[in-house]
Length: 124
Image 1 (tube, rainbow, N blue to C red):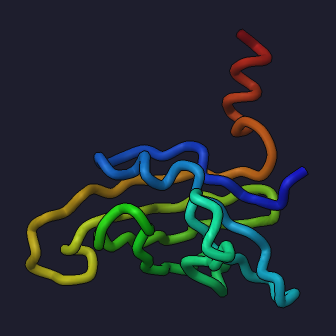
Image 2 (image 1 turned 90 degrees about the vertical axis):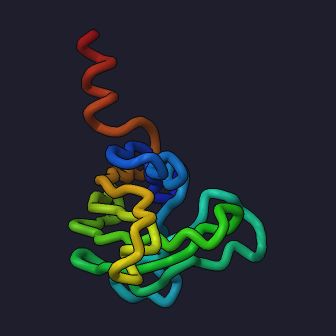
């Protein structure tokens, strides 16, 4: 089973779909933190952000998506799942700028389908 805690469910604004497939991995330094990666593998798989734990808020730019700034607030993260809030747009980092690209929530999980999806499929 992969250690990737992959964003699989995104709700909210128009840009949220761009987060699907991005993922968290446990930090390689043995600390109790996680690193965040773009869904596109390559470029040495350098993390977009390191040192993430429950309650962390961080900013990043997704490669191949222009200069659109993103912010994620991780409500909770474990080695199996994560969830939190996301926002994208210049007004998130430059107050007064009016080109907000949206905000919403995300859920991420290691392994297969999200728990709710697996339960729904089993009962359908």
